[in-house]
Image 1 (cartoon, rainbow, N blue to C red):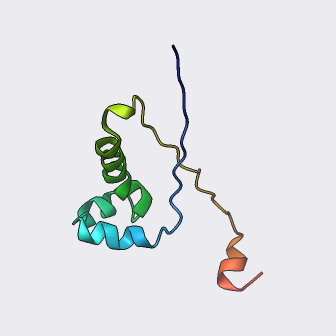
Image 2 (image 1 turned 90 degrees about the vertical axis):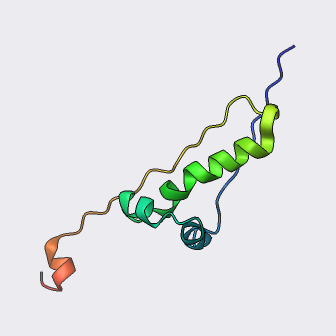
Amino acid sequence: MIRTSDYVFQLCELLKLQSCCKKLDLLSELMDHSRNYVLTALPFILSLLQRGLGQRVRLLTHSLTPEVSILLPVGLLTGTD
């Protein structure tokens, strides 16, 4: 018998990750990830889910939304055209 299930966990209050990184003493890792709180806390979150779910999970993975880069003309940044 093959059973499949997909559950999606979404991190909504990203500001709480800042206090999480401080409590877990992840400040040096935070600097390694260019102050990206999601990337810094992600290994801890995945480990926590793995321990909590135990044998009930066979595959635990993540996907991050791609960061959007916005290129602005230099004149917009300095206030000159």
